[in-house]
Amino acid sequence: MKMKKLAAIAMSVAVTVSLAGCGGTTEKEATGTTTQNESAEETKDTFTIGFSNCSQDTPFFANMTPIIGDYGKEKGLEVISLNADNDVAKQNKDIQDLISRGIDVLLVNPVNEDGPSAGIEACNKAGIPVITVDKNVKKGYDAWVGRDNKEMGRLVGERLIELLGGKDAAKGTILEIQGTAGSTTMMNRRDGFDAAIAEAPGLKIVQSSYCDYDRSKAIPATQDLLQANKDVVAIYGHNDDMALGAAQVCAEQGFADVLVCGVDGLMEAVLKIEEGGYACTASNDPVLLGQTAVDTAIKIMAGEKVEEFVDAGTVVIDADNVADYADKELDFATMVK
Image (spheres, rainbow, N blue to C red):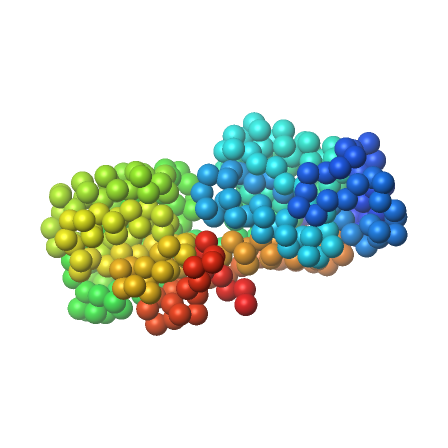
C-alpha cells in the first residue's frame, strides 16, 4: 500500500481547511460546508474529503453521497461530493476539480476498475491519499473499502441449499439473473454462488443474458427462462432489484413455490422476506460502507496504517433474522445500530 507523504498529510489535519484550499471557491458544495471566511480556530483539527461517486442511477449509489456527507459532517469534516454519471472522462475531470478545490483525501467509487486512472495518478503526484469505495481500481489506491462479493454470493448459495433441503436432497433448476458483462462484481457474485451450488449435485444452474442490475431487463429475461426450463426451484439475482423483478414474474405466472434470492439487502427485498415472498439476501449496507470509508480516511490522515482491503462486512438476511433488519424508513438493511 502506498503510504508516501502521509506524515506530511497527517500534519495537515491540524492546519486549517482555508489554508489547505487556498485559491479555491469561497463556498464548497459539501454536505458540511466551510468557507474561506471561517477562522483558523473554527476549522482546526479537520480536513477536507473529496468524494467522486460513479453515478446516482441505483438506490445503492444514490445513498452513498448523503451517507458519506452526513457522517463526515458528524465527524467535523468537510465533504465535497461530485457525481460522474457513469462517465469515465467526467470522473477524471471531477477528481481534478476536487484536487483544485483543496481536498486532503479522495474517496472514489470508480466507474470501473480501469476508469479514473488519470485522476488517481494526479492525486498520487499531489500526495493526496486515495481510498476506493465499493468498487476498486487496479493501482494507485491506498486502501479499498468494500465487500467480498464472492463471499456474498457463496453465503446466499449455501443458505439457498439449506432452504431446498440440504446438499443431498436439493434437486431442480436454478435460474441465475446476471448483472453487467465484464463487471468484477458480477463475476464474483456469480462465481461465489456457483461454487456453493456445485456442492449440491442435484441442482443445475441456467444463466440469463446480462441484465445490467436493472429490474426492467430482468423481468423479460425471467419470463423467457421460465418458459424454456422445467423443474425451476429457485432464482438467484446478482442484485435484489433484478431478483425482485423475477419474484414479480413468478407471482404473476403462478410459480409460488420458486424460492427467490439476491444480494444487497434492498429494503424492498427485506420486507418481502418478512411477508414470505422472498427467500434471502446478503446485506450490502451502504451506511456501514460509507461510514467505514470516512473512518478509514480519518485513520490515514492521522498517520495510522490501515489494511489494503478494509472489509465492511455482510450478513445473510432470511426469515430467521429478518425482524432485526426490516425497517420501512430505510432503503437498505443496515448493520449500524
